[in-house]
Image (cartoon, rainbow, N blue to C red; front, side, top):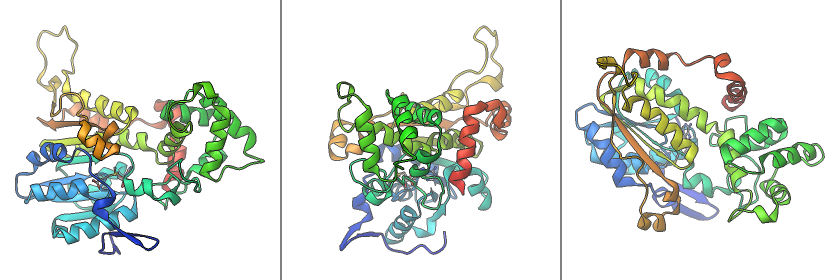
Length: 367
Ligand SMILES: C[S@@+](CC[C@H](N)C(=O)[O-])C[C@H]1O[C@@H](n2cnc3c(N)ncnc32)[C@H](O)[C@@H]1O
């Protein structure tokens, strides 16, 4: 990335915070143990799809002295801080920062003439930097413009979702991504009132949810929590991006290569688990007398189910409470069937109307 300032500090008013104190990497030693065995040879390449402040990335490079790391992030501020940290750790010569969304995984590698990589890591969601920057509107506990974009250059923001989506679309977002029980009521109140009272500030949305959700049905904490989570996932296309990226990663993985993913809510973890399970089972009817070689599993599980943080880590880093860590290793070349399927994603019509809606919104995200 061009024009990255080589400093790893964040200025807030008069206070300057060091990048390594802003975000604590979750399950750090577990991730290193899962990723690094694939990086023992000269010329090994690891991609960190969610570079953030490079907490994991620095640990990978230190533990794998022969490896180079391609670090992708959609947030230019995260890239700037990560690049500064790599510089001060003396690791810049083995670090390639890339400003991109990770669903452009294949293009990112293609642009650098890289075909196969040895490990890919994802630590999904927001960094503490993003959560703490109140003006970005991710948090319901501070009043701010309803923005929520991880990439400030993207057009679609939370304000625009709330102003332009139909009641049905909003209900779908709140129900699917927030598992919000009062999705329909919240969506119809937004659509009914938005002409006279456009929603621009997070406090307005919090107040609206507060009015709609009956007191007797309040979850613990802020009643708007699920609606904020759902909006953030929609604005940033988080689940679409994850689902379309995992197959691209498999297509670019060397045999013996590893995919390691940390998720922070059930929908993300379900997406990761369902993708990994495709390669962990025999892909043939159970009554077939001889299983063809091509139908044998192509992944080996590196974790037993999902790894969670222990009490001590949760206490020192509350963000780790919801983490689910999964990893697989590619144990043989991807079967032709999966190469064909994953190289040629289904078109809009066969994915149905819901996907079509996501596609049109995705265009707005990319602009
Ligand atoms: C939880 S943080 C990663 C923290 C990092 N592991 C560390 O230790 O510092 C997630 C990062 O992924 C980035 N991100 C999320 N979705 C992305 C996407 N689709 N494409 C690229 N970056 C993304 C966010 O901007 C954020 O900086």
